[in-house]
Amino acid sequence: MNKARMLLTLPCLALLAACNMGGGGNASSGDSVQGELVGARIGAPFTLTDQDGKPARWEDYKGQYRLVYFGYTYCPDVCPVDLQRIMQAFAQFEKAAPERAAQVQPILISVDPQRDTPAVLKTYVAAFHPRLVGLTGTPEQIAKVAKDFVVIYNKEGEPGMSDYLVGHSRTPYLFDPDGKPMALVPVDDPSTPKVDEGAPDTVLAFLEKWIK
Ligand code: NI
Image (tube, rainbow, N blue to C red):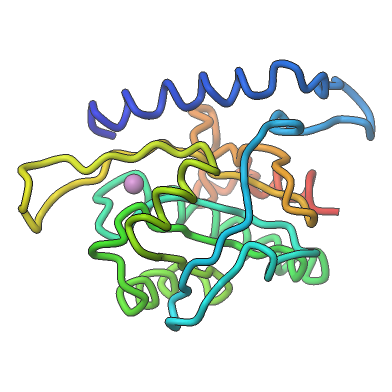
């Protein structure tokens, strides 16, 4: 994680915490437990373009849980690691509970619409999981969606350079079947054992907990 990305991450998380302040939803035990994002104003209707070049609307996923990750295919470090982590856990969840997993739509939304064309996204998402959808749009569409989903991003580098980085907040969201925010996927839990170390994965446990 580079410095600029760190800086971008922190205010966003602070913002999320602030969003949730009046939510009143953090019960601590039993079935009444709610995610930390319940009541937060994250998400809004959109129309973007999917990896096949077809229109994709937020409403198209109505009735499905949505795992939403904002990132970009040229991201050198955090995005691929997070996506790998989430989609690996999702694949395990699919094996263990195929009917529940079928109710989940994993989505990557690009914060680099200039380079992330549908064709570029198509190759990228397919490398993680066949069910992962990649969405892009015009710079204006992406700017609006990012704002509506409380995601900050910022191109880094000299103007006009084709080789640049995009600093962005790290916000892997889980939305409920009504499109309301539920919880943050615990991808950055430093104590998390990795799947390949043979220990139960925190992200898998998260899916088991929230996807009914
Ligand atoms: Ni990234």
